[in-house]
Amino acid sequence: MSDTTAATGFVEYFNETHQMARQTARRFIDQAVKPHIDEWEEAGTFPRELYKQAGDLGLLSIGHPTAYGGTGEADVFLKVAVSEELMRSGSGGFVASIGSLDIGLPPVWRMGSDALKDRVVPQVLSGEKIAALAVTEPSGGSDVANLKTRAVRDGDHYVVNGSKTFITSGIRADYYTVAVRTGEPGFAGVSLLLIEKGTPGFTTGKPLKKMGWWASDTAELFFEDCRVPVGNLLGPENSGFFTIMANFQAERLSLAVMAYMTAQLALEQCLDYVKERSTFGKPLAKHQVIRHKLAEMATKVDVAREYAYRVAARMAAGKQAITEVSMAKNFATTVADEVTHEAVQIFGGMGYMRESLVERLYRDNRILSIGGGTHEIMNEIIAKQMNL
Image 1 (spheres, rainbow, N blue to C red):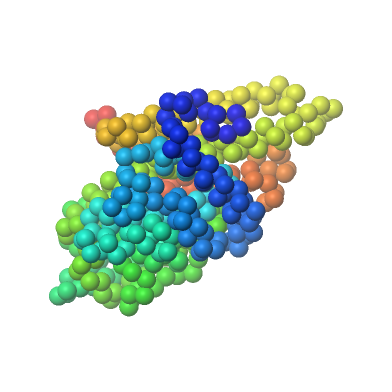
Image 2: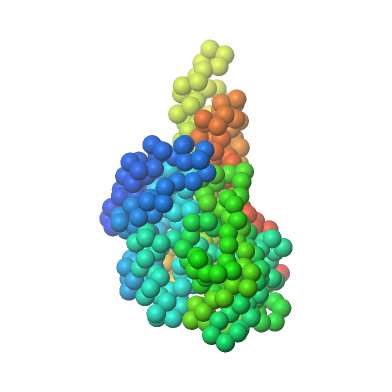
């Protein structure tokens, strides 16, 4: 299978509009990203103007409200189609950073005041400004209900103290949707504040050095008596936990897409390599052990993709998919673990070299079963939905 447009089920899930968006995204990746992505990976960043280019093409507005220049929330497969093509950059870090608005912005347009939405959302969808989500803390990880960063009401402001870590677009973002504690311990005391770059008392750390996602701007955030206007509260005070949870469903589907596309790219690299590389007098493709490895890899990728499509269809129909999206994320990330491992094995020594795409895919893949809720958290969600 040369690419996902040939996948079984394409006609069922994707229409002509999705095809056009897919082609636009592919041209963007082929022309603006692929020629430079190796350089950007080594540099640990990519030019900010890429956001504006993506915004001008309409790639950032997908899944966001039409009232602010978006395409609307209902067309889940439009997002899937474009996400698949963005992953063809071969850099999970690039995709995570260019897409940080998809986790940072929804709480703003869902729960923010009209004035805040009118000011912030169009700027981000156009690529002029960058949005990030700041939930994870050094002491917490996936334990969102017990976050420590505190916001205390003081007249027309909240005074925020605490820190966040592992924040995608952490340094270059203009708007940060920040989870804070405004009330009692536990999930019932969590709120969301929009904190803007340049707010006194708010600073960012140096870029964090990571195993993978090198092109992603990832950083720590620090709040020291940071005064945030009360008007930047997103939703009622102490209601933030449920907004975060609602946000997670789309994020977990996106991570499933990233995972099966990571596996797809690794498989494609192998299919090309085994025809070129010869051992013991014949191409690798003629060795039965390699052929069978590739057959197993292809099967797993196809099943992971098709199940993610079914979950996306359920979400598009407005049906509850808490269990299914958790299953899709876990299955796709497990497949990506296995396929990228086998890809490096098939490439041998070359698979260990930085010049090889499978080496990057192997590294980038590792975060996918951690981000958006760990594999173990997903299993706990599934178990609870089974009344266990």
